[in-house]
Length: 104
Image 1 (cartoon, rainbow, N blue to C red):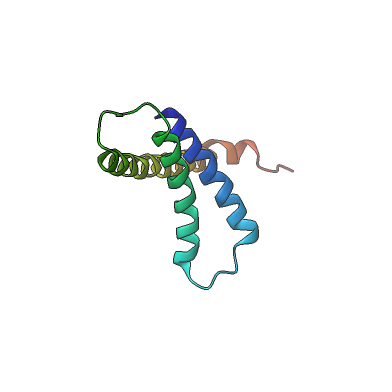
Image 2 (spheres, rainbow, N blue to C red):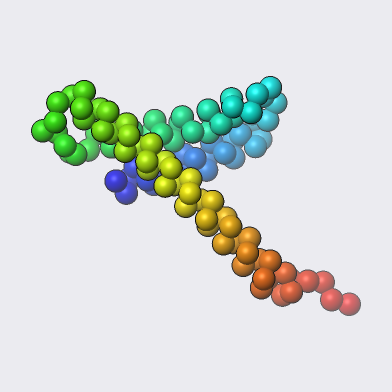
C-alpha cells in the first residue's frame, strides 16, 4: 500500500509538472484532468496488483478490488497534496513573509 501511494504521489507530481510546461494548450479542461489522474491511478493499480495482496480471491473480484483501492489511494494522495500545499501557504503567509520582507 505504501509503494502504491508513493508511486501515485511521485507520478502525480511528475505529470503535473509536465502539464505545466508542455500540455497547457488543451482546448478542454477535462483533458488535462484526465491525463493528470489516469497515469497515477494506473501506476497505483500496477503496484497493488503485483503484490501478494488477496491472491485467494477470484481474478475478476481481485481486479475490481485493486482498481477501487488504487482510486482510493489516488484520492488520498490528492487530498494530502492539497493539505500540504495549504499548510505551506498558510505558514508562509503567517510567518515567513515578515522574515523575508525587504527592509530599507
